[in-house]
Length: 277
Image 1 (cartoon, rainbow, N blue to C red):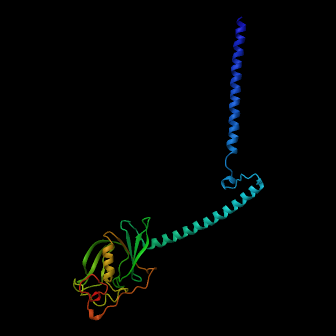
Image 2: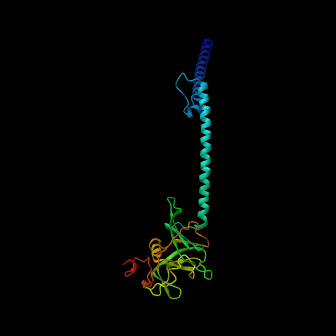
Image 3: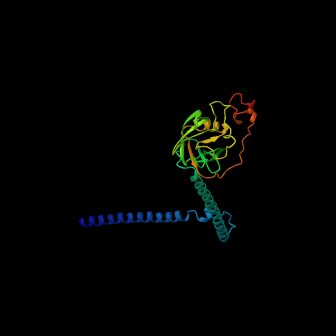
């Protein structure tokens, strides 16, 4: 009797093991089948290029030929895009190289950055673009800087103060003065006046704007000096460079009429200026 019970237990254990093996093999078979389906159902290159056709009349050879043509076309497009990117990159590099020549050590605090070209006597005002870089050539002005005996020293300056009538060398006065601090101390203003009165402009200064004829200060007509005075806040950087402005334009100023004495013909703000009566 005891032997019979033992045999029954053995048969039961064998049956359970057999069931476990059957289940295991079934699960394994399903996983393998599912894996094959998953791999085979992944989109092919033809699918990604949109060349898989549901039309049963299209042969696989036609699809393969179309795929090869598409790949060739894509390679051509990629080549063109790469060339365009390289071209754009070259342009950007050139722009940065040009920018670095004149925009030196920007602190990016002001909306504007000025460059004074002592070579051909121009002021270029750069404005920030959408990225906050001084790349927009916003305004160009004709000026006069220091002579060879008293040159305007190169370097990066900043506007540290403003004076409606700035005191210049030789007890002279300049309208709409902006004080520059840096390697030296200079003033950006109008040409000299003998007094702080709008009708006392001295001869020679206005007529020589566009030539190096100062003792280091940067001088402009009243109109342009006021524009800088009104638009350049304290802290605006000014880079003086001993070179020509590559964007120089033919700028002319109104002629003075002798009978109107010491008035600046661009000064429309001073009462009594006969040029604006």
